[in-house]
Length: 376
Image 1 (spheres, rainbow, N blue to C red):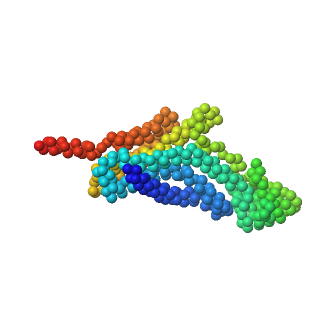
Image 2: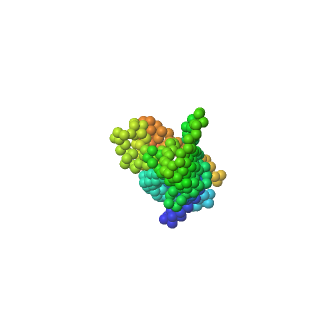
Image 3: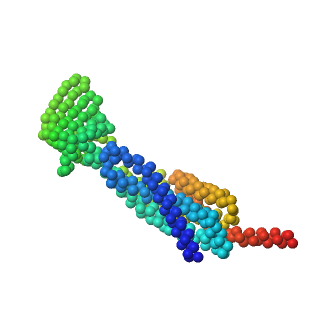
């Protein structure tokens, strides 16, 4: 029996890897499109692009893992039925529960791994991602102003920089400021330095000329300077955002009811998120059982197991929809929180009952005996 369990578990694990990596690759491609503009227009280095997109993978893997487990288990057990392997196992007296042991073990391992991912991996990845995103958006370096290109800011300011020096300074600076409707200011300088101040980005000009023209009176002023500092009131924020729900650990989430700094709505969201971190990983085990219980307790059909597979997929969709619905309801009222647990526990114990106590061959033989007795 151990050899059979290892054989089935190996097939499920290989199938899970193929399905999960395929789905991850597709979703990574769609998510990475959001950051392509940073590479093409802002000059974001490729390694930072890869780092930012890879930090999204723990969150995506956590969502895809139960679905990948369901598909892998369903495919393996259906193939074993078509190859008559499960038929031979049942003829040898192997019960449905023993046949489902491999799926149960794989589902439990994925559950433990996802508990780690949800409670330690995702918060750490979210904190790193937000810090990296903040540094990129507020960094006055080559990612904001590229060599030899005109950079237009949202407040009517255009900046041109000829070259970035190795010491961090820049040379050949040209700035056109039309942020004020009645004035136009032009700044040129031989050298300068980009500074990120608390109030926003600034440029320190060295050896240059400031020219100003009044659009109403057409009065022109020109000023030569040795040092001059200009501030850009861009929409970029120099302050980090508040800590998101995904960044908090489970202890902070579950104890947020007593946090006076949070609103009532935020407290409910934190509590629900903390409970979901305890619940959601177990869907890996539940979906693995969903995928095999119908195939193991049903009678063999030479025409295929289409109805059984469709029923299992429908049950999985209903449970998934219930999880989303009860999560939204619990965000409005914590009295709905127990339904999140019931949505997991009720189908889980139903699957265990069917695998442990439902014996289709017993009922088949009892029916055959009654028919034979009635015939006599």
